[in-house]
Image (cartoon, each protein chain N blue to C red):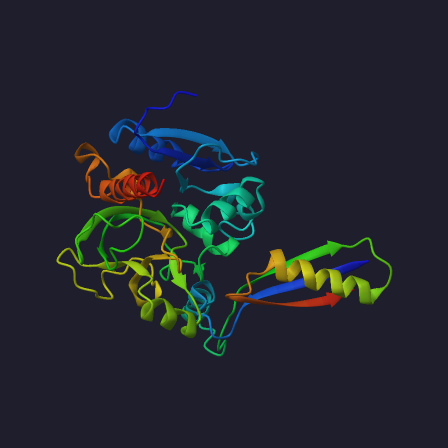
Length: 79
Length: 246
């Protein structure tokens, strides 16, 4: 079963890369891009039976490894 | 392996991608005359180590996050046990990042606020002298040490930072040459100019600057020596206390 995991910095944490990207976009004239947050995207192929088990496993490895809970949050998407 | 009697044994953990392991080994062995051992990350024992150094570098290529993969190396179980027993562990640069990832110290590292890799000398003020690595420092002493990192922008949630400050666990802070804490003296945007912290038991210290690269005047500064001299002194005092107890 395939899942996607999106890891982003928590809203309370300043994102220096996103900030730099939005400044670059503004300098290109895209003034209506109000904000950019940069993150990470993972695709995983899980050898489990059923979506509930896939979601549980994906959440577990995201919390333990893929994301650092001090600064990041994650979202799991079943595909 | 040979052991110089009366000297301490420093274990320098080597991860794939560590690149300051030899600097640390050189400083403790050749400058300070102590015993030094390299310990490969796949090993499970620290042997006869008295002190553990998690060195700087780019362990596992900094994949995923700095220090994130090194945390799962087999040797880290022994390092966690060693730290939990109150024995001295110092994490330098990437070693500090590993400490944050494995939970030896609180917080996390963000990309430097200007997104640049900073390789330069900075000044840090010793905020706490009651740790195993700063006992020989004068309170408020300013050290000139090199930094070399892209992710040294220390972050922790406000309640954690408040706790670090109120319990005296901010050990080093970026300052000007004259010891003033200013935003301009902060090379990476670290919260409260934090350059290094310690754990509650004060035996585990992590810092972004490189004391091991500042142990000889010939390389620009010998200000880093005092950290290693402090732990050597602390161990000799501890040894004599144990001898008295026996």
